[in-house]
Length: 90
Image (cartoon, rainbow, N blue to C red):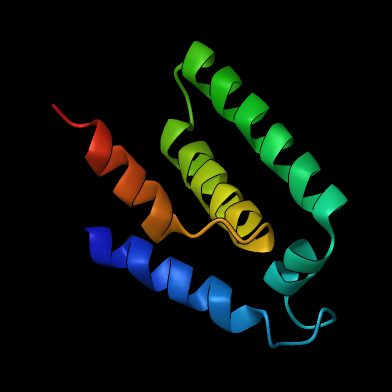
């Protein structure tokens, strides 16, 4: 299951080197305003879907994708986030 997340992160990192015309991910990585607005939009859609009890999985996937892109665009490595979470375990 977590292998899918690892593959997503690998793909996002690979897309840094693709052309913005061919890669939506590359556009998000290079346009921080677009990336921020997409994270906000997708979180809003997730909240709405939870409230309506519909399409929750699809919207959650969108949030995770856009959040992972946003983190990469801002040089926040998921590995570092996971290490921080590990430190917080009791």
